[in-house]
Length: 491
View 1 (tube, one colour):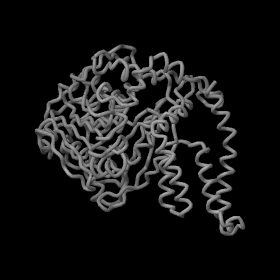
View 2: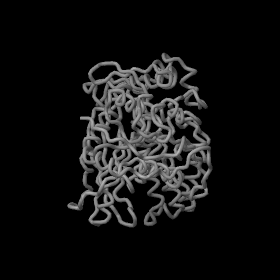
View 3: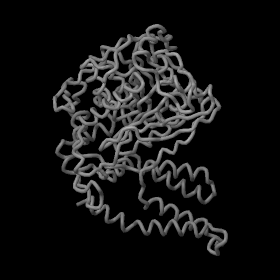
View 4: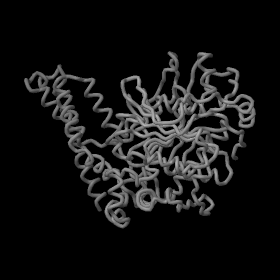
């Protein structure tokens, strides 16, 4: 019933929000008499703020049309590679008519970015994608709003999430020979499970896993998010935050954790900060500071756009990750597409390098929660493992913004390059970015030309200075090397 009440209220507020937008423009149009009033700017700013507080925020677009690669503008074509009921595998294909740039693009690493399914859309990682596109072939998981998925498309469980990730990895392996995987926040757990299951079966695993700010072991340095999950019984979540989608949506009748409840929770974590931000926006409009006002709009267009999560997936995540800690306790069984239960064993991973990234000021995934992956992945040699902590970075700072671009990304880029097999570039025959060499040939060449050692010194915790005076902490397990045994590609 709460969902229906919310939708009714939103529908009633929508015309008033639209009227407020029109009024804001009327009082700023110099050709109209209202704009000549002494308080016109203040009235316009008030209506503008009213419009933004009451409007409905739709799913944003990535909007990445070009990227700069060594001073050359490279065109980006966004397309759906695989369309699943609850997720799209989205590719950002790069094009250039500069032969030298094209030759460079062809030999660069392939990266699967697994975006979080925890309230916001995958576009929250827009800055992550844009930055990675400069030096990598990029794919991303674009999760769908559960209220738009008809009941006929079936259920969605945490097991399905794990199976989706494995399917996407195999797809990239089939096309390129292998790939790297980057998981941000929530997906660090299912991604580790997916790679673990592939390793246990003897499949080819990704070249590397980069895990950023995720709850691998939510018992360490618990945050308010962790405390909420541990202080409430599983039944409380099912009875208080799960509702059925109203009849006005394609997914009518589906049980979900509604996006508007999630958004309320996000705001409740820092209400003073959001109130101050909106007041600053009002003052920027009064001053005519269009750049600051536009920055506010862009942030909240993304922040206020939320999606519904399928109830089964959400409740299973709460119990598996935040209450029973099944991954770290070694008690997690995942049902594969054939209906068979398989035990998740991270210790079986041997041929995938591991990089974990944490933010010093992360208030969502506490210190040590992501680094716990190193203890679980005991089968990976220490020379292929590294931990990195970004000083002064909060949760969002490790994958978006200045600290991501200037401090975190260089480390991720270097790590991926160090574990990328060296292959001879293919001849330039077309303007589009070509596919990588076939798996078998790539393996042979990798054996003949082992990669150079990663420029990471081992031993104790060291502090280095980031380009923008942001200190970062690198905690590698030991000196990294890139030699990898050639492996067959999974079907």
